[in-house]
Structures are given as C-alpha cells and as structure tokens.
Amino acid sequence: MSISATNARYLDETLLWLCSIASPIGEEGALSRAVEERVRKASFASSIERVGDSIVATLGARENSKTRIALVGHLDTVRTENGPARIENGRCFGAGSSDMKSGLAVMLAVAELADKPFDCEIKLVFYAREEGPYAENELGDVLDKVPSLSEIDLAVCLEPSDNRVHLGCAGSLHARVTFEGRTSHSARPWEGANAVHAAAPFLARIAALKPRDSVIDGQLYRTVTSVTSARDLGRGRNIVPDRFELNVNHRFAPCFSVEDAEKEVTSLVGSDAQIVFTDRSPGAMPNASNRLVRALIDSGVRGVAPKQAWTDVARFAARGVAAVNFGPGENAQAHQKNESTSLELVHEGYEIVKRWITAIS
Image 1 (cartoon, rainbow, N blue to C red):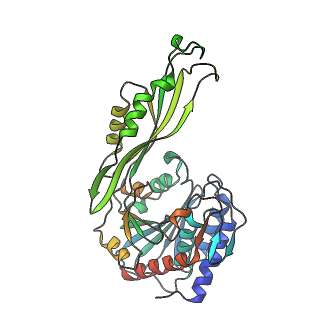
Image 2 (image 1 turned 30 degrees about the horizontal axis):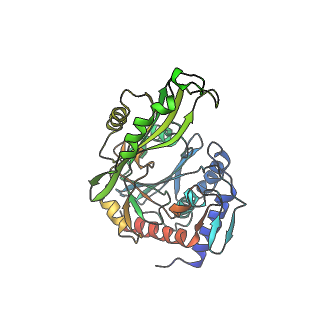
Image 3 (image 1 turned 60 degrees about the vertical axis):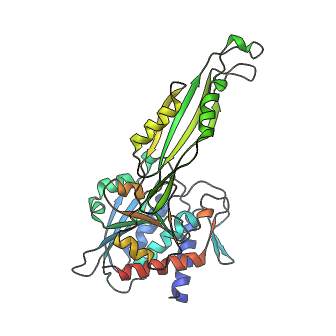
C-alpha cells in the first residue's frame, strides 16, 4: 500500500511545522499549545486532558470497541546546533526531526486524516521533558493524573527506530563514585594520597568486564557497565588531588530490577569509594507474544530487535501496561548536530500505523 500524494504532502508540511516551533527541553510550552489547538479540531477527538506542558487526547471509537491503545511521543528536543527547519532532497532538517517530531507528525496524521470512527479507542500522549533526568520526565505526572492510561492494552512509543519494532528496553542506573585522598605538593607526593591513583583498581575491574547476555522472549539484551565521565576535584595542577569523581552508567537487561542493579554496582565498587545513585530507570520486558504487538509486526515493519537503550516503555511496564518502541525517525540521527530524517520513512511509518489500527479491534 503506497501513500497518496495528498497524505505525503500533509505529513511533510506537518513535520516541517513541528520543527519550526522550537521546543528544547524545558521550553515545550509553545509547541504544546500549538499541538493542542490542532488536535482539538480533529473530527474524532472526544476529550483533551492537560498536565503541565503535556496533553492526552482521546480519539473516540465505534460503539462496542474493546481495544484501547496509546500512541506516545515527547514534545521536547535536546539542545543542539541546527539551522532553520527546512526540507531538502527528500529530508526534513530541524532539531527533533528524527527524535521525535517525525513520530509526532504520525500521531497528528492519525487524528487529522481520519475519515470515520476508529475500531479501537486511541489515546495520543504528547508529553514534555523526556530528554532529561528520569525524575523530571513529565510522563510520570501524566500517568499519575490520567488513570485511564493504566487501562490501555498497548502503548506504542514513537521513538526513532527506522520503522522497526524495538521490543522492551534495558534499564539504566547512574552512580556518582567518589574516591578520596589527601593533598600534598606534587613535588612530594609521598606526603599525600592521590585520589586519582586510588581509582586505578576500580577502573581496572570496570575495564575487564565483559557484556553479560540475557535472552528474554527470544530477544538478546546485554548488561554492561561503563565510566562515562571523570572529574578531578583537585586544587591545582601542582597539588596531589584529594578527590576524584566518576560517573558510572550501568545498563541492565529487563529481567533485573533496579535493586539488583544497585547491588551489582555497589559490589563492584566495594570499599574503595563512596557511592551516590543519581538516576534510576527500570527496564521493560519485550512483550513479543502480545497479540497487538504481533499485529504491529505483521503490518509491514522493517524488522524487530531488542531495545538495548532505555525508553519510556519502562514507565508503562511499571504500571502493568504492555508497551513497545516503534517510530519513523532515523535512529542514527537522534541528538545529532544538523539533525534530519527521511520523509520516505515518515510516509511509510504512517502507513504502517494506519494498517495496524485498521487490523485491530
């Protein structure tokens, strides 16, 4: 099934419009209001609920419909260098064009291009502050304040995935690991205790770690641990430092809990340093056998893979709601300078979602 010229033009113009409204994290208000205004005019929008800068729109279904789904996308983008939003050579350029305003364009198309009631109830969730810390992500507040979202049968997060279904997600844990020593003049280091050098045994243990594989529902996830930043808290270039701080990022398969992850990192550090866990994000199981997930896969997606990174499918999973990742944005373009995405993928993604919605009831 190929997209009509009219619908292709609509999607191109909608994505360009979304990219023309800047929405770096924390500044989503203008885009949120503009999206709400458009959705309110959609023929089958039966209700709009607002939580902060986030919106939940319900698209009414025919009577006796038993299936409830959610299409979920974040309004914010990372802060990056981009020129003006534009379309060139079959691509849309602009901050968030891939991650994830291409997904938002598909969501708007579902609402605005519908010519009859749906065979299932659809909730469109446009939310703010995804690109920051877990605790500040506004989807948590949305799920708390819109209880009907806990009753849906499947949530599809339209994160960029090149029109592939990415099942589940890995969990993520960040820890600040601080090594302490004692200052001295660098000409007489024996009079002090170098905090950077004290980290050497721990860094050696981290470097020796191998990815640990877990196969869940036929999908391979890997548990890995990395030092992602280091900060010398010394007092000068000729002074032996008395503090050295590392950020440790532990990514864990969804069969492990946050508590399991904390225990593993704590054991790895041992008594060498102090640990403060700064960000905890649980994983989500793949749900490969869910009938709605199978129907999505059968609607023409480009492939199926496990999601090694973390996404907001985990927030739904924590509430007992099945969720998967599927979106038309180019995964490799996410967070890039001069971000862009293929318009052909956006057209194809909309057609896949439309076929899927038509197939389920």
